[in-house]
Length: 160
Length: 160
DNA sequence: GTTTCATATGTTATGATATAACATTACATC
DNA sequence: GATGTAATGTTATATCATAACATATGAAAC
Ligand SMILES: [Zn+2]
Ligand SMILES: [Zn+2]
Ligand SMILES: [Zn+2]
Ligand SMILES: [Zn+2]
Image (cartoon, rainbow over all chains, first blue to last red):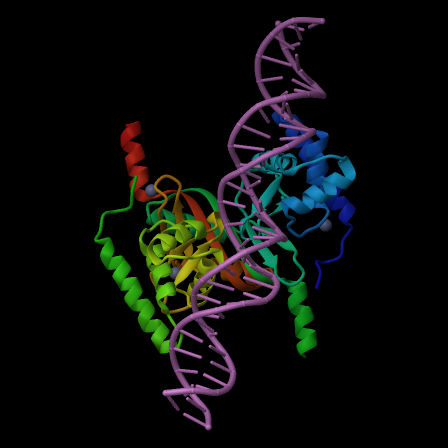
């Protein structure tokens, strides 16, 4: 009913460190506001909505309005530091922000966690199928909802 | 800059006919309101939003409010007669409503048309990748945005 | 053919997500 | 320190979706 246990502070600090490095290299300004939003997004492995971010931001940074959050999210999206989960109107940190990619997301309907895959065979199959259709892909949305490994096991125990 | 030319009235009448047949078989009530919404959705091969449907419905059926449209859409979704395009908050008719399926959508950013694929290799790759992750899939969202064949060709002519 | 009940629709209000438009501030460069 | 650009503040509003309750419709039972 939850993601595997781990030292999540490391997830957050790794993500913030990688983001700082990437932005420095690119000449992009990871301001404290933007870093704050990124940190809020990274507090969980479940996608978080813009207004939930807004609430937290207000408590921690003082004043903030919807555009504050959406601008920061736009920046983070442009830098590839977060992804938008279209089917949830929500956002999640990207664990591999260094290179551009369109990942596949596994969204658990029970515990809410989202895992990101970058399966080569899936990508190859999509490329082949779209090429055959004469379609030139610019962006991919692949979101699979269901039960994660942990929740599947938990459910099996209850049923058994 | 547009989908291939065809006799679109046939698309609409085929879709409505198939829907009537399916609903009769299933004992589902395809009321005139629901059929009207389905017809509006089928007027184009581009996804249409709920409020755009609402406008048209008001002109043609008289009174209507958001719940009117969303209820009809919920019914049509449940019957597999339409799909929701998550990345656009919009809806499109399903050309193969008889069997349940999760298709792949090719969304043209230029002309707006959406095409539905049901590529076996893509589906197999997704199944393999998710099984390896121990994830039990319940629903798939695969939406690819880019340029359709027609728009790609048109763009090439302009560039050349 | 009326009663009965479930389903469908009407109606009002509101919640949830996202952006437009313009003012102000911060920061790098000169 | 003047200048210009990018970032943020602020207010208002657009857009998408549902809750809650009233009314109407239509099939089945009587
Ligand atoms: Zn973690
Ligand atoms: Zn990623
Ligand atoms: Zn379909
Ligand atoms: Zn096109």
